[in-house]
Amino acid sequence: MRIPRRPLSRLTAAIVAVGLALLGLIMVTPASAASLVQVTNFGDNPGNMKMHVYVPDNRPAKPAVVLAMHGCGGSGQNFYSGSEFASLADRYGFVVIYPTATQSAGFGNCFDTWSDAAKRRGGGSDPVSLISMIEYVKRQYNGDPGRVYATGSSSGGMMTQHMLALHPDVFKAGASFMGVPFGCFADAADYPPTTSRCTGGSMDRTPQQWGDAVRQAYPGYGGTRPPVQLWHGTGDTLVPYQLLRESVEQWTDVFGLGQTPTSTDTPQPGWNRQRFAGSSGAVNVESYSIQGAGHSLPSSGMAAAAVQFFGLTGSTPGPGPTTGSPSTPPAGGTGCKVTAAVTAWNTGLTENITITNTGGSAVNGWSLAFTLPGGQAVTNGWNAAYRTAGGQVTATNVSFNGTIAPGQSVTIGFQATHTGDTAAATGFSLNGAACTTG
Image (cartoon, rainbow, N blue to C red):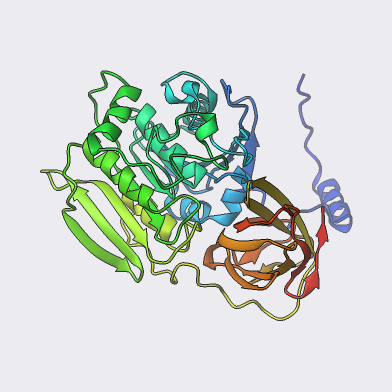
């Protein structure tokens, strides 16, 4: 039962306010400031996923909805703090859903794009959970059902293409960073880090075969298909760059387009773009080859390009630095804690490192130094620029994650070879200050 609140006299209210201030309980940040909020009981959740949502203070009566999905080993909270979608939501007034996957598939926290259930519309697993999240936002925040979009990085990029295939009636467009075509993984045994035909560099199907996979995902669907934007680094070896070509073949075939782009350009240095438009001139497929980039997208400015592709802004995304260009870290350090998680196989491994600022002030520009166990060598990395000297590694922030507020975290990671020792790195220090581990 709710008990009615009795009004306080002005004097009493003043005394209470002063007392709270003395106790340090009055928040400096206004209570109305937007923040990331966890949602439980959002609906049918066969994927056992977690949901966070970011709702900007200034938004239209029927805001657009963007589903933003992390890579393997990540989380919704990390993708919120490590990407630019929330700041763009503040600018353009759309709601962002940040799901957290809990499937393992060897890596941990990967979106299920391999199981039979996940490949059938309404079959179960993660796709059903994601649709539940979208329906929740439509109900709770009056989300516009005609303006729902999907985007994601790595595993999240894979799920982006997956959801566009299964639910073309739900999404208006999608932007996939470092993803793979729908139907690329045969089953769980074909998913990395095990030997995978999909990501092993040998996947090659015809455009019609790829297109048929999408058409079979929702048999009989004759409505409008959502346009797709595809991003990949030419130096990516974790999810090989050639899979960009396979994704282009899939989606151009779905739209009935040829394999020759209708236009090519370089909107920013190192960003080679191809566009595939229909007879009306509308661009249905857009691909970006990012020169020299590894498994590290999206970097600065790319989320803005995706949001522009969605039609959520009329302005041109501002220029960003060349992919992998680090900011210069300041002198000194801060309190920090590092958590490392390793997934190993045969002679390879991946390691995800979460850096938490335990100090009292923000870190603006950072450099994390650490030592690899004997026999390990970094071959690729993401969310940081890596410099190695023997077993010593220095990871420096890239433009979109250079600031770590007190109590906040960023997650980076790398792929490495090993000769038998698969332990995590040690001796972490942030801007010269030793970090605790745990």
